[in-house]
Image (cartoon, rainbow, N blue to C red):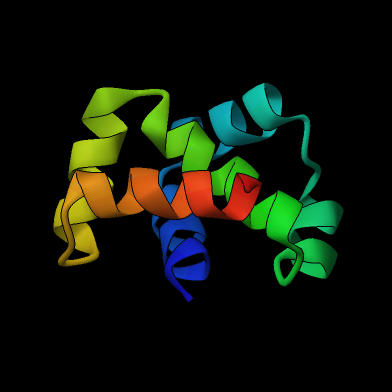
Length: 78
């Protein structure tokens, strides 16, 4: 659920959404069809973890802590 919320947040700004697709290699279709897959969820959370300003802003918007988002990314990659 956290990855889905993070994705929703990431897509609220066009430049950030384009950067997400560019850096992760995901396509809009892959996001739509694969968001329930661990690899896609991990990619979204890793994208946020890789850019501290986005990580902090996303955590604030999702009413969580940045460490929770980073831990979720690690868990999905385990």
